[in-house]
Length: 112
Image 1 (cartoon, helix red, strand yellow):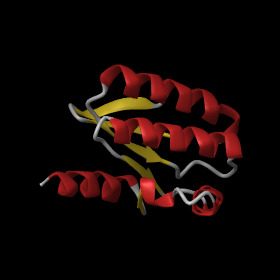
Image 2 (tube, rainbow, N blue to C red):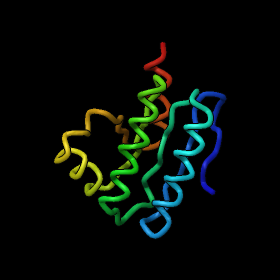
Image 3 (cartoon, rainbow, N blue to C red):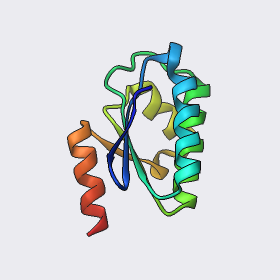
């Protein structure tokens, strides 16, 4: 599993390509729902293909985090993810960053 506790209040995940993506996102959703106390940074740099189902799971994850008062930051998402989220009118629900270091910094700055 590519999910790690980066700090006590941030979970970091390196998202695999589509073949394993749905299972990893389901695992991450389980972690988030059981903790309810963390922001999540998802590094998408290894993703080349993404299905609508995976985009839907990302939105579910973002919604769960928002319901707990936390955020989902997508780092270096492929154009397919951002296009699908924009078409669905949901891109504003997630944070975006060029890489995971910038994503982590944005989360930290948003708390101060």
